[in-house]
Length: 486
Image 1: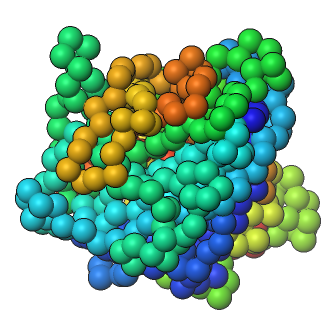
Image 2: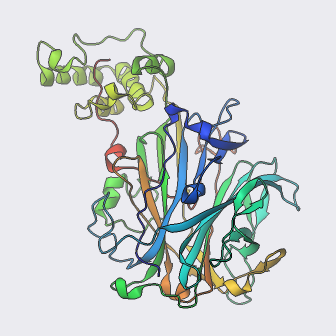
Image 3: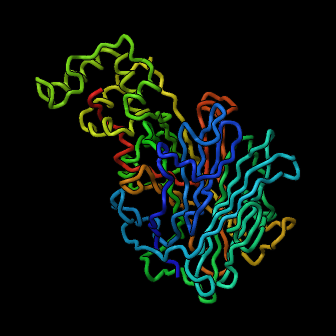
């Protein structure tokens, strides 16, 4: 039986400064890298990393996002997040049965039409008992590694079946693939008058796309509606983790300017969101980091006893007032401190002064003279998804399952675990279409790549519209508040 939203803790990508990239296999195109764990077991095999890899780097050096599948369940879309604290399970929900087994197919492929190359990953997991009442849900992703565009109105999926049909299969470069497939499924809107699959979508070199696919199974399939008051939707929960706190974050084209503001609206439906974070610096300590990435210290004047805190002869509060006033009066000083805060914010000397206000003042007073390179990630969620009958799927690359109807999706975002820079993204699909065994859904986003200034290349900006979920703890969304002992 499928239950409520699953809130399952999964292994996160090791911190960037701890050489976490060594446990991943990477594929690069232009300035973009995509990676999967080279050694994994169970549902952690569904994790995918995407990030910026400039100047010949073979793994992300200027920020990445780690997307992972969390769970599925049944909810009342109007109430399940209402009144929930940012890090607690949604109101009225309970933990679902954990994923039983994870699968992953991955390979480098060539599009037979255009001849362009792409990296393909299909990861998924079994939930419940597929023989009696369960579901298989997975994510198929592409990274266009070629030099030309790819156009398609479909995606390809591999899945597992009942208990006798869940053996890991060797395929491509993976030995933990799902046993059934490939299944070609329409991901564009279905023409209501002709039933035909809609127009092809085009993906440029470096574009990264996801499709979420799931189907129901079992001789006595039951969504578990009796356990959820007023159940309306099946939910698929994703989590996205980032290495450093973004210093700006907006939702719905800027109508909501922070995750905290989003929470105050009871996690309203989200059409898009965008966040920008500084490329993290590195070094043995924060001073080394600052020297490496913020070369703007020469000629700056600091007040006596700058950042001395309770060691200052005038006392902590008075010293903080002096230091903050100095930044407001000197935009160049503020710009330098702003750079250090944003690019070296993982060091304890920066973090532990979170209530003193140095970084907040610096960001407001900065004149930008000490530039802070940034990576901007933008997600745009299309409003529709397709449903159909799994019985119409044929294990063949030559047969397309168009599906039976196009429906409207809901997307909701809520803060992730308090100890992670992460948020959850919930994709909600109408329960009526998935109330029986043998039904499937597929959700495919628009995918963008390019800079905000119209540059067709990735430049300093990576823009995505994906089905991944962003996870950012509320405390981290607020920017690091202060700086001590510079």
